[in-house]
Structure formats: C-alpha cells, structure tokens
Image 1 (spheres, helix red, strand yellow):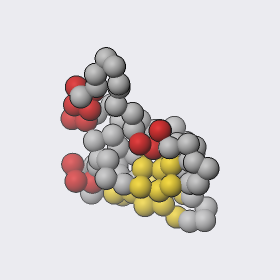
Image 2 (cartoon, one colour):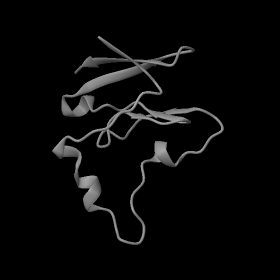
Image 3 (cartoon, one colour):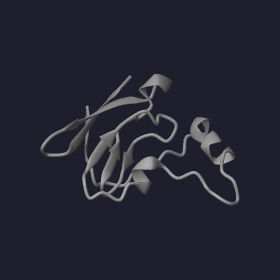
Length: 87
C-alpha cells in the first residue's frame, strides 16, 4: 500500500491518457477541474481517470485510473493522506 501526502506533486504521462490534449483548441485549452478550483474550500472529487491523481492547493482529484488497471486511491481525513492500492 502506498501513502502520499495530498500536497505532493503528481502527474500522468501515460500515453493512454494523452487524448485530453487532442481536445484542446488554440483559443481555450482544456484545464483540469482540480487545477481550476481556487477555493477557499478544499474539494475532494473523482471521475477523471484520464488525468489521473490530481493534488492541487484547494482540490484533490482521487481518480487514479483503477478502471484502466492502474490504482484505486482513497484519502484519510483529517490527515489528508492518500492511500493507493493496485487494481
């Protein structure tokens, strides 16, 4: 089991998620919801397996791609620790 601090950096360079880039236009690029949320409330969300785990200042996107054979992730409150297991 992996435990990670919610405020750590994350990213997903797996090519199967790259089609998000194909939907960007020159005028209005696609921005991850967790990155766009400015708070002040801390929001915990899911349903963005294509982007993977998102750890931003005021939003945590927990979807880490379990439906694609990646990881299933949960958050332990109030410590805000992430726990991931292989799917």
